[in-house]
Amino acid sequence: MGVQQTAAVSRLGNRKGFTLIEMAIVLVIIGLLIGGVLKGQELIDSTKVKRAVNDMNGISAAYNSYLDRYKAIPGDDGPVATLTARGGNWTTITVGGNADGVLAITPAMTFTGGGEADAFWQALKASGLISGNPAVTGVAALPQNAFNGLIGVSVNSTGITGMSGTGLSVCLSQVPGKMAAQIDRQVDDGIPGSGTVRATVGTVGANTVPGTAPVPPAGYDETLQYTVCMGM
Image 1 (cartoon, rainbow, N blue to C red):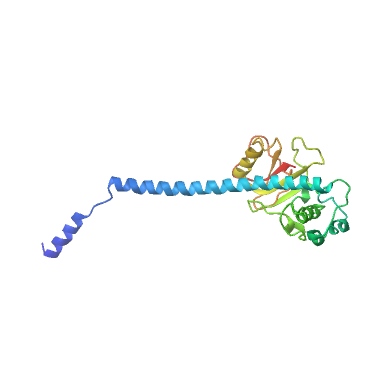
Image 2: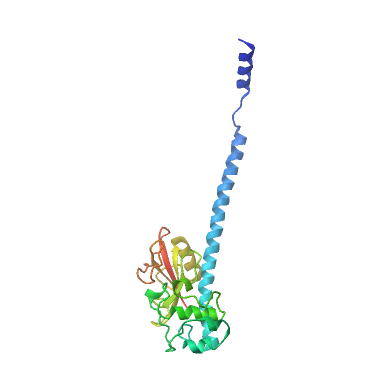
């Protein structure tokens, strides 16, 4: 055997595979990375749920604050000349309500800006109770929720416990099933068909009208998307 061949065999003989300790360390590192990714996603989901709950509570609080401040229903308050006369941001609004004591927003208008919805969002923004440009109208006037859907309001259409037929609901569209269940548990009883929070099965990527496909009390399906409503 030549000198070169002897050296090559010697190098091959000196090669070693991973030891059990090295493999264990690699597996631990992989486990930590996977755990970190999963924990990070869990934190992101939790943050979205908290934001969604805060949004619903915030709209409800703004609505009640408006009632207390102006002794009128936001969106029904009007006519527009009376509102613009308040000055400031009020001068930029374009619509007012008919002051009949009823907010005219049907379930079908929840995410469209129809009926007195434009007046509702303009009034809350002009009063400074929520942020945004008071002059914007239509779908563009509706706030976005944490799930890339919309926040809307309508007359009670989901049979929410304790709400009359003229009561109002604040609704979130395009909520993933897992997060819809968490919202319901955090605010209410965790059951989609009972309590002060109700859900409607939605179409992925669509702003489904609340009440069109009520969820049975059995529970949420994490593979589906929902419209979630809370009584105001």
